[in-house]
Length: 175
Length: 175
Length: 175
Image 1 (cartoon, chains in turn orange, purple, brown):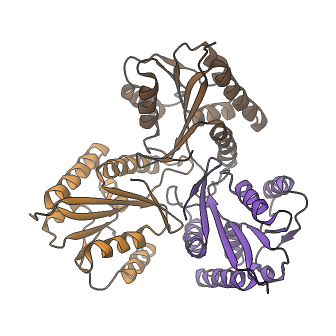
Image 2: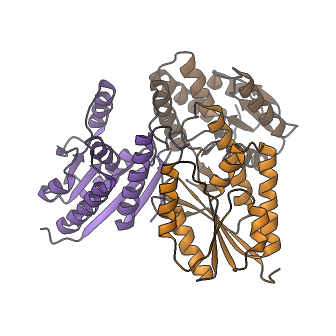
Image 3: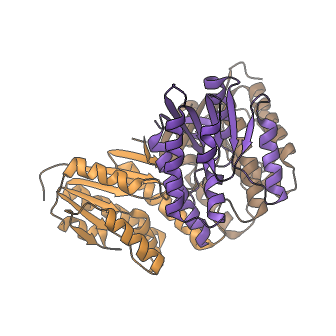
């Protein structure tokens, strides 16, 4: 679609590490007001609603927002701004597992997403979570989630042009 | 109070990552024997007592120790050594949540602490924990704790002059 | 035994961070086909069997594999290849705790392992897990495990010539 080359920026970190803020600053640097915010969050309860509301309030006003919990690869090519900020891969994986997608399906969907971005061109900034640095979780779904998300993160990071780990709000350059 | 400028050193990492030892070495480099150890640990059970005892045994003998679980911003300006080693912010946040302080109160107390240090001058070395890199915890208090601590860590890291992430005893420079 | 000097490469990271793959690439660079894979995994259930099977399938075919869940310091000097890939310290510590070894015994066994490598010479590449960056675990055995593993990792990292933290498949150089 666009004649400009595809650039992928990968931003990871723990909970409350400043990932979203850093990704928004990078989006503003690269796209100014020409940024679409692609949100994957779904509210299942009031705590989640409150978290989403807080994120929404923090977002710069002029950016259009598209909310898409699952079909990100299908929606991405329809977005017209040079820069898209996808927040976040970790909720996208969680949404897919909750509707019953298998690990193989989610890894295929990740490849489709990365392919859609290469075709679209422009810049995609992806936010994700690191969840594998604690004790092995007791429950099997949590173990499956950290395995699948770990593989999705590796695929996205491998395809990225820039990658950052956020720690206490400060970026460590990975790539 | 002191005419020397304020310096803030931020040291974070996981459990048993060598944070306290690294912070103590940095304190010794910057202050020699002119260091006050400001401890926030409170023993609620024998495991905690044993952990505190172990930390105490590791501490260099000549440093005076002040134990203050909560009112750190009030105590800090009364300390007379050029260097203060605050170990740790994570227990301080835990103590505040356990007595019922709200997130807003704790963030205000963090701003007060950072302000008190700027006023005091000299060097403050703060140790803290990263707790947000595992699976989302099941219980709501743990989720609140990692949210609040994450914000406190971001505020302290943003105000710092030096920041380090310890991994397996080795420092990664963040800033 | 061998006249060549001892080199220790330390590779850490979270679950699904790409540690094993990175360590295998480093082993291939340093040893080509002259690598022994020293595996500490023990299958207690079908999930673990499936994980071990997956790891085995990923391994380069020509490397001989020795499976030793506990007596690594005793086995290491008997291996004849210039490069040994030990995967992983974290399961080794888990196996030792499960048979009832104390923290002091495990730290002594770690010193023995590092000593055996210095005597053997050649290259030892060790893989391990970071497990201390989440919320404090509820159960006492998990807390003990992360304490002991943290100390083992610090000892190995301190003795290493190269050290890496893997994040989303990308290496951060620690040393």
